[in-house]
Image 1 (cartoon, rainbow over the protein chains, first blue to last red):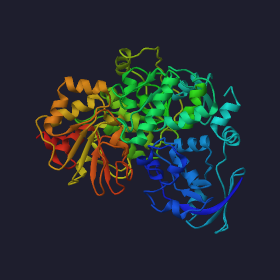
Image 2: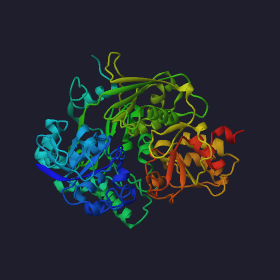
Image 3: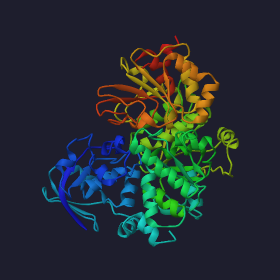
Image 4: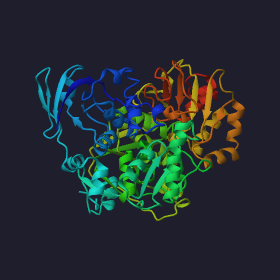
Length: 164
Length: 421
Protein backbone atom coordinates (compact mmCIF):
# COMPACT_ATOMS: atom_id res chain seq x y z
CA UNK A 1 0.00 0.00 0.00
CA UNK A 2 1.30 3.46 -0.88
CA UNK A 3 0.10 6.45 1.10
CA UNK A 4 0.52 9.95 -0.27
CA UNK A 5 -0.66 12.87 1.79
CA UNK A 6 -0.04 16.26 3.28
CA UNK A 7 1.95 16.40 6.52
CA UNK A 8 0.58 17.64 9.84
CA UNK A 9 3.48 17.83 12.26
CA UNK A 10 3.36 17.67 16.07
CA UNK A 11 6.11 17.77 18.70
CA UNK A 12 7.62 15.36 21.23
CA UNK A 13 5.69 13.33 23.83
CA UNK A 14 2.27 13.81 22.21
CA UNK A 15 0.14 11.98 24.78
CA UNK A 16 -3.15 10.18 24.43
CA UNK A 17 -4.97 12.94 26.38
CA UNK A 18 -3.87 15.34 23.62
CA UNK A 19 -4.94 12.90 20.88
CA UNK A 20 -8.35 12.27 22.42
CA UNK A 21 -9.20 14.02 25.72
CA UNK A 22 -10.70 11.74 28.41
CA UNK A 23 -13.87 13.84 28.54
CA UNK A 24 -14.91 12.17 25.26
CA UNK A 25 -14.20 8.62 26.42
CA UNK A 26 -17.77 8.08 27.54
CA UNK A 27 -18.24 7.01 23.92
CA UNK A 28 -16.49 4.28 21.97
CA UNK A 29 -18.10 5.25 18.63
CA UNK A 30 -15.20 5.73 16.16
CA UNK A 31 -16.88 8.60 14.29
CA UNK A 32 -17.72 10.43 17.51
CA UNK A 33 -14.10 10.03 18.71
CA UNK A 34 -12.80 11.21 15.33
CA UNK A 35 -14.60 14.57 15.77
CA UNK A 36 -12.33 15.43 18.72
CA UNK A 37 -8.97 14.17 17.42
CA UNK A 38 -6.09 16.45 18.65
CA UNK A 39 -8.66 18.97 19.89
CA UNK A 40 -6.65 20.37 22.82
CA UNK A 41 -3.48 20.73 20.72
CA UNK A 42 -5.31 22.35 17.78
CA UNK A 43 -9.08 22.88 18.10
CA UNK A 44 -9.51 23.10 14.32
CA UNK A 45 -7.37 20.08 13.43
CA UNK A 46 -10.16 17.83 12.14
CA UNK A 47 -11.61 20.69 10.06
CA UNK A 48 -8.25 21.45 8.44
CA UNK A 49 -7.19 17.96 7.40
CA UNK A 50 -8.15 16.08 4.23
CA UNK A 51 -8.69 12.35 3.91
CA UNK A 52 -5.37 10.57 3.44
CA UNK A 53 -3.21 13.20 5.15
CA UNK A 54 -0.25 12.01 7.19
CA UNK A 55 0.47 12.81 10.84
CA UNK A 56 4.04 13.28 12.05
CA UNK A 57 5.17 13.16 15.65
CA UNK A 58 8.42 13.63 17.53
CA UNK A 59 9.74 11.17 20.12
CA UNK A 60 7.47 9.04 22.33
CA UNK A 61 4.33 9.63 20.23
CA UNK A 62 1.17 8.33 21.93
CA UNK A 63 2.53 8.19 25.47
CA UNK A 64 0.15 7.99 28.41
CA UNK A 65 -2.98 5.93 28.68
CA UNK A 66 -3.79 2.63 26.98
CA UNK A 67 -6.92 4.01 25.34
CA UNK A 68 -7.27 2.48 21.89
CA UNK A 69 -9.61 5.40 21.32
CA UNK A 70 -6.43 7.35 20.40
CA UNK A 71 -5.40 5.44 17.24
CA UNK A 72 -9.12 4.96 16.48
CA UNK A 73 -9.76 8.73 16.53
CA UNK A 74 -6.72 9.35 14.28
CA UNK A 75 -7.75 6.68 11.79
CA UNK A 76 -11.40 7.72 11.60
CA UNK A 77 -10.50 11.40 11.34
CA UNK A 78 -9.08 10.42 7.94
CA UNK A 79 -5.34 10.25 8.66
CA UNK A 80 -3.81 7.51 6.50
CA UNK A 81 -0.70 6.79 8.57
CA UNK A 82 1.55 8.18 11.31
CA UNK A 83 5.31 8.64 11.07
CA UNK A 84 7.22 9.49 14.28
CA UNK A 85 10.72 9.63 15.73
CA UNK A 86 9.59 6.95 18.21
CA UNK A 87 6.31 5.57 19.55
CA UNK A 88 5.18 4.85 23.10
CA UNK A 89 4.70 1.11 23.46
CA UNK A 90 0.97 0.73 24.13
CA UNK A 91 0.13 3.12 21.28
CA UNK A 92 2.51 1.10 19.10
CA UNK A 93 0.79 -2.23 19.80
CA UNK A 94 -2.70 -0.73 19.66
CA UNK A 95 -2.02 0.67 16.20
CA UNK A 96 -0.96 -2.73 14.85
CA UNK A 97 -3.82 -4.49 16.61
CA UNK A 98 -6.53 -2.19 15.25
CA UNK A 99 -4.99 -1.38 11.87
CA UNK A 100 -3.57 2.15 11.89
CA UNK A 101 -0.34 2.05 9.85
CA UNK A 102 2.58 3.60 11.77
CA UNK A 103 6.21 4.08 10.81
CA UNK A 104 9.21 4.63 12.99
CA UNK A 105 11.69 6.95 11.25
CA UNK A 106 13.65 9.49 13.24
CA UNK A 107 14.98 11.40 10.25
CA UNK A 108 11.83 11.39 8.13
CA UNK A 109 9.88 12.74 11.10
CA UNK A 110 12.48 15.27 12.15
CA UNK A 111 13.07 16.69 8.66
CA UNK A 112 9.44 17.02 7.56
CA UNK A 113 7.34 20.16 8.05
CA UNK A 114 3.62 20.77 8.13
CA UNK A 115 2.42 21.19 4.55
CA UNK A 116 5.05 18.89 2.98
CA UNK A 117 3.83 16.11 0.69
CA UNK A 118 4.92 12.66 1.92
CA UNK A 119 4.85 9.28 0.20
CA UNK A 120 5.00 6.15 2.37
CA UNK A 121 5.27 2.61 1.02
CA UNK A 122 3.97 0.32 3.77
CA UNK A 123 5.55 -2.82 2.32
CA UNK A 124 9.10 -1.58 1.86
CA UNK A 125 9.05 1.05 4.60
CA UNK A 126 10.36 3.61 2.11
CA UNK A 127 9.37 7.16 2.92
CA UNK A 128 9.82 9.97 0.42
CA UNK A 129 9.33 13.63 1.18
CA UNK A 130 8.06 14.83 -2.19
CA UNK A 131 8.48 18.47 -1.15
CA UNK A 132 12.15 18.28 -0.16
CA UNK A 133 13.03 15.30 -2.41
CA UNK A 134 14.67 13.40 0.48
CA UNK A 135 14.20 9.64 0.98
CA UNK A 136 14.22 7.58 4.16
CA UNK A 137 13.64 4.01 5.34
CA UNK A 138 11.48 3.23 8.37
CA UNK A 139 12.55 0.73 11.04
CA UNK A 140 11.52 -2.70 9.60
CA UNK A 141 8.33 -4.25 10.96
CA UNK A 142 8.84 -7.78 12.43
CA UNK A 143 7.29 -10.64 10.42
CA UNK A 144 4.69 -11.47 13.08
CA UNK A 145 3.42 -7.91 13.07
CA UNK A 146 3.30 -7.88 9.27
CA UNK A 147 1.07 -10.97 9.55
CA UNK A 148 -1.19 -9.02 11.92
CA UNK A 149 -1.50 -6.23 9.38
CA UNK A 150 -2.17 -8.56 6.43
CA UNK A 151 -4.82 -10.39 8.45
CA UNK A 152 -6.53 -7.03 9.02
CA UNK A 153 -5.68 -6.65 12.71
CA UNK A 154 -5.32 -8.88 15.76
CA UNK A 155 -8.94 -10.08 16.04
CA UNK A 156 -9.05 -11.31 12.44
CA UNK A 157 -5.70 -13.00 13.02
CA UNK A 158 -6.95 -14.71 16.18
CA UNK A 159 -10.12 -15.93 14.51
CA UNK A 160 -8.27 -17.20 11.42
CA UNK A 161 -5.53 -18.88 13.40
CA UNK A 162 -7.48 -20.72 15.99
CA UNK A 163 -4.36 -21.97 17.74
CA UNK A 164 -2.76 -18.51 18.30
CA UNK B 1 23.70 -16.09 30.72
CA UNK B 2 20.95 -15.88 33.34
CA UNK B 3 17.54 -14.27 33.12
CA UNK B 4 15.86 -11.34 34.83
CA UNK B 5 12.64 -11.83 36.80
CA UNK B 6 10.72 -10.35 33.85
CA UNK B 7 12.31 -12.79 31.38
CA UNK B 8 11.63 -15.74 33.70
CA UNK B 9 7.93 -14.98 34.02
CA UNK B 10 7.59 -14.44 30.26
CA UNK B 11 9.48 -17.70 29.55
CA UNK B 12 7.30 -19.76 31.89
CA UNK B 13 4.10 -18.35 30.38
CA UNK B 14 5.21 -18.95 26.80
CA UNK B 15 6.35 -22.53 27.45
CA UNK B 16 10.01 -21.79 26.81
CA UNK B 17 13.12 -22.55 28.85
CA UNK B 18 14.56 -19.17 27.99
CA UNK B 19 13.57 -15.91 26.32
CA UNK B 20 15.78 -13.01 25.28
CA UNK B 21 15.14 -9.29 24.79
CA UNK B 22 13.71 -8.48 21.37
CA UNK B 23 12.12 -11.91 20.90
CA UNK B 24 8.42 -11.94 19.94
CA UNK B 25 6.44 -14.46 21.98
CA UNK B 26 2.85 -15.54 22.46
CA UNK B 27 2.15 -16.08 26.15
CA UNK B 28 -0.68 -17.35 28.32
CA UNK B 29 -2.18 -14.69 30.53
CA UNK B 30 -3.29 -15.41 34.09
CA UNK B 31 -5.52 -12.33 34.37
CA UNK B 32 -7.04 -10.01 31.74
CA UNK B 33 -8.55 -6.77 33.00
CA UNK B 34 -10.81 -4.11 31.53
CA UNK B 35 -12.66 -1.04 32.81
CA UNK B 36 -15.66 1.07 31.84
CA UNK B 37 -13.63 2.99 29.22
CA UNK B 38 -11.68 0.18 27.59
CA UNK B 39 -13.87 -2.91 28.02
CA UNK B 40 -16.83 -1.72 25.87
CA UNK B 41 -14.55 -1.54 22.83
CA UNK B 42 -13.11 -4.98 23.71
CA UNK B 43 -16.56 -6.48 24.21
CA UNK B 44 -17.66 -5.17 20.79
CA UNK B 45 -14.62 -6.87 19.20
CA UNK B 46 -15.22 -10.05 21.20
CA UNK B 47 -18.87 -10.29 20.12
CA UNK B 48 -17.86 -9.68 16.48
CA UNK B 49 -15.88 -12.95 16.47
CA UNK B 50 -19.04 -14.90 17.38
CA UNK B 51 -17.10 -17.30 19.61
CA UNK B 52 -19.43 -19.03 22.04
CA UNK B 53 -17.71 -18.39 25.33
CA UNK B 54 -14.88 -16.56 27.07
CA UNK B 55 -11.67 -18.51 27.66
CA UNK B 56 -12.08 -18.54 31.45
CA UNK B 57 -14.73 -16.65 33.40
CA UNK B 58 -12.51 -16.59 36.52
CA UNK B 59 -9.62 -14.84 34.77
CA UNK B 60 -11.42 -11.94 33.13
CA UNK B 61 -11.82 -8.99 35.48
CA UNK B 62 -14.25 -6.15 34.81
CA UNK B 63 -13.96 -3.03 36.95
CA UNK B 64 -16.21 -0.05 36.16
CA UNK B 65 -14.17 2.57 38.01
CA UNK B 66 -13.40 5.54 35.73
CA UNK B 67 -16.69 7.41 35.24
CA UNK B 68 -18.57 5.70 38.07
CA UNK B 69 -20.89 6.18 39.87
CA UNK B 70 -22.07 6.95 36.32
CA UNK B 71 -21.48 10.62 35.64
CA UNK B 72 -23.86 10.94 32.68
CA UNK B 73 -26.06 8.96 30.32
CA UNK B 74 -23.24 8.04 27.96
CA UNK B 75 -21.16 6.67 30.86
CA UNK B 76 -24.15 4.74 32.16
CA UNK B 77 -24.46 3.09 28.75
CA UNK B 78 -20.77 2.12 28.85
CA UNK B 79 -21.11 0.60 32.33
CA UNK B 80 -24.21 -1.28 31.19
CA UNK B 81 -22.18 -2.97 28.44
CA UNK B 82 -19.86 -4.38 31.15
CA UNK B 83 -22.73 -5.44 33.39
CA UNK B 84 -24.62 -7.19 30.56
CA UNK B 85 -21.46 -8.97 29.41
CA UNK B 86 -20.65 -10.06 32.97
CA UNK B 87 -24.16 -11.49 33.37
CA UNK B 88 -24.14 -13.24 29.99
CA UNK B 89 -20.79 -14.99 30.52
CA UNK B 90 -21.06 -15.31 34.32
CA UNK B 91 -17.82 -13.36 34.86
CA UNK B 92 -16.70 -14.09 38.44
CA UNK B 93 -14.88 -10.83 39.09
CA UNK B 94 -17.27 -8.10 38.01
CA UNK B 95 -17.48 -5.36 40.61
CA UNK B 96 -20.73 -3.44 40.98
CA UNK B 97 -20.98 -0.05 42.68
CA UNK B 98 -20.78 -0.83 46.39
CA UNK B 99 -18.00 -3.37 45.76
CA UNK B 100 -16.00 -1.50 43.18
CA UNK B 101 -12.77 0.33 43.85
CA UNK B 102 -10.04 1.79 41.66
CA UNK B 103 -8.88 -1.31 39.77
CA UNK B 104 -5.21 -1.15 40.75
CA UNK B 105 -6.04 -0.67 44.43
CA UNK B 106 -8.79 -3.30 44.34
CA UNK B 107 -7.15 -6.27 42.60
CA UNK B 108 -4.09 -6.64 44.86
CA UNK B 109 -6.21 -5.97 47.93
CA UNK B 110 -8.59 -8.81 46.95
CA UNK B 111 -5.72 -11.21 46.23
CA UNK B 112 -6.80 -11.52 42.58
CA UNK B 113 -3.34 -10.65 41.21
CA UNK B 114 -0.37 -12.50 42.65
CA UNK B 115 3.42 -12.86 42.45
CA UNK B 116 4.76 -14.73 39.44
CA UNK B 117 1.64 -14.16 37.34
CA UNK B 118 1.37 -12.67 33.87
CA UNK B 119 -1.31 -9.99 33.88
CA UNK B 120 -2.58 -7.77 31.10
CA UNK B 121 -5.01 -4.94 31.55
CA UNK B 122 -6.61 -2.52 29.14
CA UNK B 123 -5.42 0.30 31.34
CA UNK B 124 -1.93 1.72 31.21
CA UNK B 125 -1.44 1.62 34.99
CA UNK B 126 -1.80 -2.17 35.00
CA UNK B 127 1.98 -2.09 35.57
CA UNK B 128 1.09 -1.45 39.25
CA UNK B 129 0.98 -5.19 40.05
CA UNK B 130 4.70 -5.50 39.32
CA UNK B 131 5.07 -4.43 42.96
CA UNK B 132 4.05 -8.02 43.81
CA UNK B 133 6.74 -9.56 41.60
CA UNK B 134 4.33 -10.23 38.72
CA UNK B 135 4.80 -9.36 35.05
CA UNK B 136 1.99 -6.92 34.50
CA UNK B 137 1.49 -4.52 31.64
CA UNK B 138 -1.04 -2.21 30.04
CA UNK B 139 -2.47 -3.12 26.65
CA UNK B 140 -5.33 -1.92 24.47
CA UNK B 141 -8.93 -3.00 24.04
CA UNK B 142 -8.16 -5.31 21.09
CA UNK B 143 -5.52 -7.14 23.14
CA UNK B 144 -8.12 -7.60 25.87
CA UNK B 145 -10.66 -8.88 23.31
CA UNK B 146 -8.16 -11.41 21.96
CA UNK B 147 -7.27 -12.56 25.48
CA UNK B 148 -10.98 -13.00 26.28
CA UNK B 149 -11.18 -15.35 23.29
CA UNK B 150 -8.14 -17.52 23.94
CA UNK B 151 -6.29 -16.39 27.06
CA UNK B 152 -3.20 -15.31 25.16
CA UNK B 153 -1.32 -12.16 24.21
CA UNK B 154 1.71 -11.29 22.09
CA UNK B 155 4.75 -9.58 23.55
CA UNK B 156 8.15 -8.38 22.50
CA UNK B 157 10.45 -9.42 25.36
CA UNK B 158 11.74 -6.16 26.84
CA UNK B 159 15.28 -5.30 27.81
CA UNK B 160 15.54 -4.65 31.54
CA UNK B 161 16.82 -1.50 33.24
CA UNK B 162 17.88 -2.05 36.83
CA UNK B 163 17.39 0.65 39.44
CA UNK B 164 19.37 0.26 42.64
CA UNK B 165 18.12 2.35 45.57
CA UNK B 166 20.53 2.71 48.50
CA UNK B 167 20.44 4.55 51.82
CA UNK B 168 17.45 5.48 53.94
CA UNK B 169 14.60 7.80 52.89
CA UNK B 170 14.15 11.05 54.82
CA UNK B 171 10.99 11.70 56.77
CA UNK B 172 7.98 12.37 54.49
CA UNK B 173 9.71 10.71 51.54
CA UNK B 174 7.81 7.68 50.22
CA UNK B 175 7.56 5.48 47.15
CA UNK B 176 5.87 8.28 45.17
CA UNK B 177 8.82 10.60 45.78
CA UNK B 178 11.31 7.91 44.69
CA UNK B 179 9.48 7.22 41.44
CA UNK B 180 8.97 10.93 40.65
CA UNK B 181 12.66 11.51 41.28
CA UNK B 182 13.54 8.52 39.06
CA UNK B 183 11.33 9.76 36.20
CA UNK B 184 12.91 13.19 36.61
CA UNK B 185 16.31 11.57 36.13
CA UNK B 186 15.52 9.42 33.07
CA UNK B 187 12.64 11.30 31.40
CA UNK B 188 9.20 10.26 30.17
CA UNK B 189 10.72 7.96 27.55
CA UNK B 190 13.76 6.98 29.61
CA UNK B 191 12.56 3.39 29.91
CA UNK B 192 10.72 3.16 26.57
CA UNK B 193 9.79 -0.49 25.78
CA UNK B 194 11.88 -1.63 28.76
CA UNK B 195 11.25 -3.44 32.03
CA UNK B 196 12.10 -1.31 35.09
CA UNK B 197 13.43 -3.57 37.84
CA UNK B 198 13.41 -1.82 41.22
CA UNK B 199 16.03 -3.18 43.62
CA UNK B 200 18.37 -2.19 46.41
CA UNK B 201 18.62 -2.08 50.19
CA UNK B 202 16.55 1.12 50.51
CA UNK B 203 13.43 -0.75 49.39
CA UNK B 204 13.13 -2.43 52.78
CA UNK B 205 11.91 0.98 54.00
CA UNK B 206 9.21 1.13 51.32
CA UNK B 207 5.97 -0.63 52.23
CA UNK B 208 3.65 -2.31 49.72
CA UNK B 209 1.64 0.89 49.25
CA UNK B 210 4.85 2.72 48.31
CA UNK B 211 5.90 -0.10 46.01
CA UNK B 212 2.54 -0.02 44.23
CA UNK B 213 3.04 3.74 43.69
CA UNK B 214 6.46 3.09 42.17
CA UNK B 215 5.44 0.25 39.86
CA UNK B 216 2.29 2.22 38.93
CA UNK B 217 4.33 5.03 37.41
CA UNK B 218 6.74 2.85 35.37
CA UNK B 219 4.51 3.72 32.38
CA UNK B 220 5.25 7.43 32.97
CA UNK B 221 8.86 6.67 32.03
CA UNK B 222 7.67 4.71 28.97
CA UNK B 223 8.31 1.38 30.71
CA UNK B 224 6.59 -1.82 29.66
CA UNK B 225 6.48 -3.02 33.24
CA UNK B 226 7.86 -2.09 36.63
CA UNK B 227 8.81 -5.00 38.86
CA UNK B 228 10.09 -5.73 42.37
CA UNK B 229 11.80 -8.91 43.55
CA UNK B 230 9.36 -10.33 46.11
CA UNK B 231 10.62 -10.35 49.73
CA UNK B 232 9.29 -10.60 53.30
CA UNK B 233 7.21 -7.45 52.83
CA UNK B 234 5.58 -8.98 49.74
CA UNK B 235 5.02 -12.29 51.50
CA UNK B 236 3.33 -10.64 54.48
CA UNK B 237 0.99 -8.70 52.16
CA UNK B 238 0.12 -11.61 49.88
CA UNK B 239 -0.28 -14.54 52.25
CA UNK B 240 -3.36 -13.14 53.98
CA UNK B 241 -5.07 -12.35 50.66
CA UNK B 242 -4.15 -15.04 48.12
CA UNK B 243 -6.80 -17.53 47.13
CA UNK B 244 -4.53 -19.26 44.58
CA UNK B 245 -0.95 -20.54 44.59
CA UNK B 246 1.74 -18.03 43.75
CA UNK B 247 5.43 -18.16 42.86
CA UNK B 248 8.30 -15.87 43.84
CA UNK B 249 10.85 -15.34 41.08
CA UNK B 250 14.10 -13.42 41.30
CA UNK B 251 16.67 -12.29 38.76
CA UNK B 252 19.78 -14.41 38.26
CA UNK B 253 23.08 -12.91 39.33
CA UNK B 254 24.36 -13.08 35.77
CA UNK B 255 21.17 -11.68 34.22
CA UNK B 256 21.74 -9.09 31.49
CA UNK B 257 20.70 -5.47 32.00
CA UNK B 258 20.50 -2.75 29.36
CA UNK B 259 21.38 -0.20 32.04
CA UNK B 260 21.96 0.01 35.78
CA UNK B 261 21.02 3.24 37.55
CA UNK B 262 22.03 3.89 41.15
CA UNK B 263 20.00 6.27 43.29
CA UNK B 264 20.89 7.41 46.81
CA UNK B 265 17.55 7.96 48.47
CA UNK B 266 18.95 9.87 51.46
CA UNK B 267 19.53 12.86 49.16
CA UNK B 268 15.93 13.00 47.95
CA UNK B 269 13.48 15.63 49.24
CA UNK B 270 9.73 15.20 48.73
CA UNK B 271 9.22 15.66 44.98
CA UNK B 272 6.83 17.65 42.83
CA UNK B 273 6.26 17.03 39.11
CA UNK B 274 5.42 20.39 37.54
CA UNK B 275 3.13 20.88 34.51
CA UNK B 276 2.91 19.36 31.95
CA UNK B 277 5.02 16.20 32.13
CA UNK B 278 5.82 13.80 34.99
CA UNK B 279 9.55 14.31 34.23
CA UNK B 280 9.43 17.99 35.27
CA UNK B 281 10.36 17.18 38.84
CA UNK B 282 11.67 19.50 41.53
CA UNK B 283 12.24 19.19 45.27
CA UNK B 284 9.27 20.72 47.09
CA UNK B 285 11.57 23.35 48.62
CA UNK B 286 12.26 24.83 45.18
CA UNK B 287 8.62 25.77 44.64
CA UNK B 288 7.58 29.00 46.30
CA UNK B 289 4.19 30.62 46.09
CA UNK B 290 2.39 28.20 43.80
CA UNK B 291 -1.14 29.07 44.92
CA UNK B 292 -3.54 26.15 44.55
CA UNK B 293 -7.25 25.92 43.77
CA UNK B 294 -7.58 22.19 44.39
CA UNK B 295 -5.84 19.27 46.09
CA UNK B 296 -6.75 15.67 45.24
CA UNK B 297 -5.59 12.79 47.44
CA UNK B 298 -6.39 9.37 46.00
CA UNK B 299 -6.03 7.45 42.67
CA UNK B 300 -4.44 4.14 41.68
CA UNK B 301 -1.09 5.70 42.58
CA UNK B 302 -1.88 6.89 46.11
CA UNK B 303 -5.36 5.73 47.13
CA UNK B 304 -4.35 3.17 49.77
CA UNK B 305 -4.90 3.27 53.52
CA UNK B 306 -1.21 4.06 54.18
CA UNK B 307 -1.55 7.17 51.98
CA UNK B 308 -4.55 8.43 53.94
CA UNK B 309 -2.80 7.79 57.26
CA UNK B 310 0.04 10.05 56.11
CA UNK B 311 -2.40 12.73 54.96
CA UNK B 312 -4.44 12.55 58.19
CA UNK B 313 -1.30 12.87 60.34
CA UNK B 314 -0.73 16.23 58.72
CA UNK B 315 -4.34 17.44 58.50
CA UNK B 316 -5.35 16.48 62.04
CA UNK B 317 -6.68 19.56 63.82
CA UNK B 318 -5.94 21.73 60.77
CA UNK B 319 -8.24 23.50 58.32
CA UNK B 320 -8.17 23.39 54.54
CA UNK B 321 -7.20 26.84 53.20
CA UNK B 322 -10.00 29.24 52.25
CA UNK B 323 -11.07 28.99 48.59
CA UNK B 324 -9.23 25.68 48.14
CA UNK B 325 -11.12 22.45 47.40
CA UNK B 326 -9.58 19.37 48.99
CA UNK B 327 -10.96 16.10 47.56
CA UNK B 328 -10.17 12.81 49.28
CA UNK B 329 -10.88 9.64 47.29
CA UNK B 330 -10.34 6.29 49.02
CA UNK B 331 -9.20 3.70 46.45
CA UNK B 332 -11.63 0.99 47.51
CA UNK B 333 -14.55 0.29 49.85
CA UNK B 334 -12.13 -1.55 52.16
CA UNK B 335 -9.81 1.45 52.27
CA UNK B 336 -12.81 3.72 52.90
CA UNK B 337 -14.04 1.55 55.77
CA UNK B 338 -10.59 1.28 57.35
CA UNK B 339 -10.16 5.04 57.10
CA UNK B 340 -13.55 5.45 58.76
CA UNK B 341 -12.74 3.01 61.57
CA UNK B 342 -9.34 4.62 62.18
CA UNK B 343 -10.94 8.07 62.45
CA UNK B 344 -9.20 9.41 59.35
CA UNK B 345 -12.45 10.34 57.59
CA UNK B 346 -13.47 12.43 60.60
CA UNK B 347 -10.12 14.24 60.49
CA UNK B 348 -10.61 15.03 56.78
CA UNK B 349 -14.20 16.21 57.17
CA UNK B 350 -13.42 18.35 60.21
CA UNK B 351 -10.56 19.90 58.25
CA UNK B 352 -13.02 20.89 55.53
CA UNK B 353 -12.13 18.29 52.91
CA UNK B 354 -14.76 16.37 50.95
CA UNK B 355 -14.63 12.57 50.85
CA UNK B 356 -15.80 10.79 47.68
CA UNK B 357 -16.80 7.26 46.79
CA UNK B 358 -13.94 5.29 45.19
CA UNK B 359 -13.46 6.40 41.56
CA UNK B 360 -10.71 7.40 39.13
CA UNK B 361 -12.80 10.57 38.73
CA UNK B 362 -10.72 13.73 38.50
CA UNK B 363 -7.37 12.03 37.79
CA UNK B 364 -8.25 11.73 34.11
CA UNK B 365 -10.57 14.72 34.01
CA UNK B 366 -13.60 12.44 34.22
CA UNK B 367 -15.71 13.91 37.02
CA UNK B 368 -15.65 14.67 40.78
CA UNK B 369 -13.31 17.65 40.64
CA UNK B 370 -12.77 19.11 37.17
CA UNK B 371 -10.63 22.24 36.87
CA UNK B 372 -11.63 25.53 35.25
CA UNK B 373 -9.34 27.47 32.91
CA UNK B 374 -6.36 28.98 34.73
CA UNK B 375 -6.78 26.84 37.86
CA UNK B 376 -3.96 24.94 39.52
CA UNK B 377 -4.23 21.60 41.31
CA UNK B 378 -1.82 19.47 43.29
CA UNK B 379 -2.73 15.80 43.09
CA UNK B 380 -1.34 12.49 44.27
CA UNK B 381 -2.25 11.11 40.83
CA UNK B 382 0.14 10.08 38.07
CA UNK B 383 -0.22 12.39 35.06
CA UNK B 384 -0.06 16.14 34.61
CA UNK B 385 -0.50 16.42 30.84
CA UNK B 386 -2.23 19.47 29.34
CA UNK B 387 -5.93 19.27 30.19
CA UNK B 388 -5.56 16.09 32.19
CA UNK B 389 -7.85 17.24 35.03
CA UNK B 390 -10.14 19.46 33.00
CA UNK B 391 -9.71 22.70 31.09
CA UNK B 392 -6.77 22.71 28.63
CA UNK B 393 -5.56 25.90 30.34
CA UNK B 394 -5.55 24.36 33.84
CA UNK B 395 -2.38 23.01 35.47
CA UNK B 396 -1.68 19.87 37.48
CA UNK B 397 1.25 19.32 39.85
CA UNK B 398 1.97 15.82 41.19
CA UNK B 399 3.22 14.80 44.64
CA UNK B 400 2.91 12.21 47.38
CA UNK B 401 0.19 12.39 50.04
CA UNK B 402 2.30 14.23 52.66
CA UNK B 403 2.99 17.25 50.48
CA UNK B 404 -0.58 17.21 49.14
CA UNK B 405 -2.06 17.28 52.64
CA UNK B 406 0.29 20.04 53.81
CA UNK B 407 -0.49 22.09 50.71
CA UNK B 408 -4.25 21.72 51.24
CA UNK B 409 -3.76 23.38 54.63
CA UNK B 410 -1.49 26.23 53.53
CA UNK B 411 -3.19 26.83 50.16
CA UNK B 412 0.09 26.68 48.26
CA UNK B 413 2.64 23.99 47.48
CA UNK B 414 4.29 23.34 50.84
CA UNK B 415 6.41 20.79 52.66
CA UNK B 416 4.85 18.98 55.64
CA UNK B 417 7.27 20.81 57.96
CA UNK B 418 5.53 24.08 57.17
CA UNK B 419 2.33 22.72 58.73
CA UNK B 420 3.84 20.72 61.57
CA UNK B 421 6.03 23.52 62.93
